[in-house]
Length: 442
Image: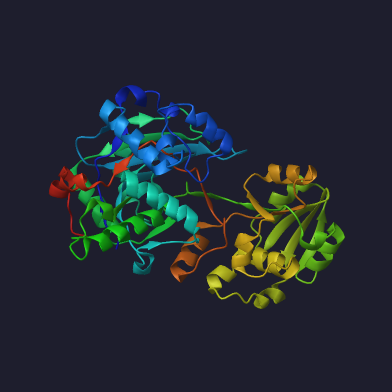
């Protein structure tokens, strides 16, 4: 199944790493405009490589990368390894402390059709092209995508825990409130064991579909240019990925609510409720702040907030067979598929997944309180509050070969950019990992 390889990581030098919080950055697709501007003011922040700007952003990133390599801002580790990466965090409003354990490595950039790396969402071509162009120009990966493998025996965690006794670098607190810690495993026998475990498993792509597809596009372009002379071992065949165990209880998926910026036909609250009634039971709720608790754990149940009033709505089971989209039963069973079909299509008239993805009248908001506030301020007409997707549902959809509605999952916390860099330049082909750590997948 999945072939992984160690890498000689690039990292900020020892002096800069002592203040690593100043140089890491959010991923390109979650960084806000305000965060972005603040980070750009630091000339050594990793955002200059991950989200470059200028008339030719990719060229600007390449120029800066060469400057940082020449001046020693970034240094490459002498030996290849697998990099243990732990994230310590708490969820808002909860006293429980979590530690998500995983590791970063190179993984072969498999085509979707090979069914080794599995996806659960579609991508936007413009974003894929942007990532592919940046990778083609720099041959440098600034942040790891997030993949999931399942190991009920938790064999690899013991090796990761041991590595964490000697961390390389750690943040005090990243932009999302997590503490990130990096360590490395360079023992050849242990690395081979990691390879053997992953060689028997598929990987579900949790986060980073655009960056992964960018790697696929770049690999395919290099293969075409090689005109049949590629060996399959070239560095551009690989992609930087952070792998965590789907069997762990520290894997958190947060809900993403649907904020209706407008209602087609300027529907009133009463008209919206009338249109919902044939499909949903509608129950008024006294306090809107109770909506998440009221719908928690209930299939096909949602909160609705409009004109200062709150409602619990739940699909009438007998109407579910009307859901006739051409997708799998696993996708049809999802809360968000129900919401998109019966609310966006049947009630609001936005017909089909393609039209819904393009419709500017919906915003995707993770913060529940923000949803209520934006409706109260008149910035949106209504908010539909949803439950989180479960890991069981993600796995079922991936193995069914289908994809979820847009913005279905938000794996928390996100990995950070600039913690570990990976080169897939041609000159990497002769480095030590090919000689010492090559293992044939089982």
